[in-house]
Image (cartoon, rainbow, N blue to C red; front, side, top):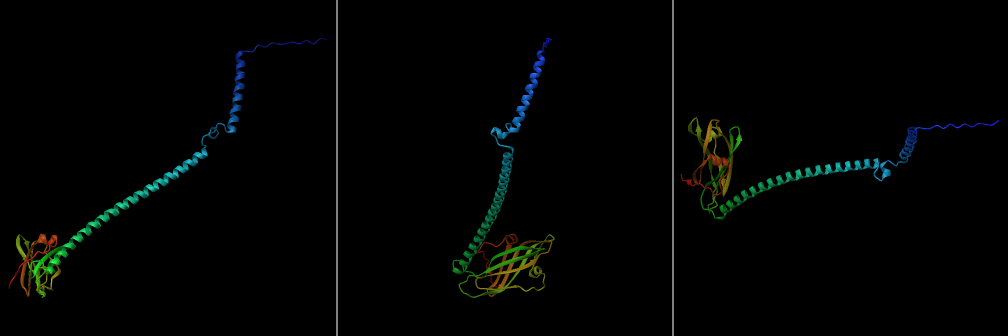
Length: 249
């Protein structure tokens, strides 16, 4: 019995063919992408650039370098501040030493003239008077007496101070007893060959405005009186060689 074969011809639409082709293309692309990811083709290391681990290491290294640079900068600033302060202190020390040297040179010059014979020969004299505040209306004084006679005899005597000023709108004089606030206060003694410094203290009333200081001495060489403005006494010692002529008894 003969076998009959029948063929059916089916015509496909062009759009269905394209859809099938696209499905195959997408599947192939997905397969290639999966392989590429698995093989590491798409990572930076595969492209010849630094990897994530290397970049992180570089970041850590740069942060350490930045921290070290900041620390060095801080140390340099501190060192500069210390150097600046040291330079200022050194400058102050130099100025102070210069002032001290100038004062010593003036003293040496004065003493050389005093004992060397270059100064004018004279008897007892007031060389300088310095007055400084000690607080609570109290004051300290330093009086320098000199003599440079050829003879080597000692100069002996007593010294008293008094101060003229204004009190209650009137000219008033505070004598030695009032300055020391002691009745019949003993005078300050002196005994020297070339010079002597006499130091002491006194107080002034609150309503008293001093104008000048009177220095009076009495001894073997006679009497001496010297008047010094208060402003000059407070300003400091006068220049070396200032003298006062003694008054004979």
